Amino acid sequence: MQSDLFNLERSDAAGSYKPTLEVARKRLISSADAGGAVCPCCGQFAKTYKRKLNSTMVASLIWLAHEQLATSDKWVDVQRKAPRRVLASRQIGTVGHWGLCRNAVATAAALHVQAAKCSGLWQITERGLEFVRGEIRVPRHVYLYANVVKGWGDESTDVREALGGHFNYAELMAGVFQ
Image (cartoon, rainbow, N blue to C red; front, side):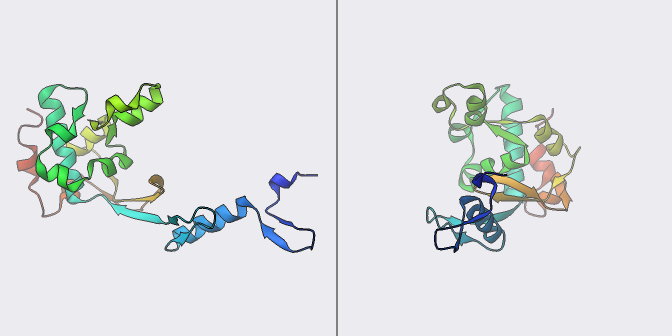
């Protein structure tokens, strides 16, 4: 006989069924995928967001590659070194969902190092360099729930497609890999 932990619903003394936390969680996630819902436990709005790898994200990633390679720094202090367009876009963090760059805070947490010393430090990954050089394609869309990757869209994009007509690839790349 299975314990109550594995039951999806249980009845109270009167015989009426009440959803367990597991059922509530499944219903909330299902509602989040269908446009969003308010969590009955905490009152927070929950939604799955579809984010496109856009031109501003890619231009910011190219800047990060240029800065990291030009200075030979392992980590780039984005808040101190980034041009206004990169800071204003606030897109570096979103690009991290594709695995194209990483934050030192996340890396520090994985290494059990004090994260406060790493705030604002970013690094392009090998995958990010391959993408910037036009060697690989990545998913065009990511699905995020609570800022965690839940899935990927079916279409892919390369660096030039993602930049579209908003930025000139050759101008952005000038000096990056020389």
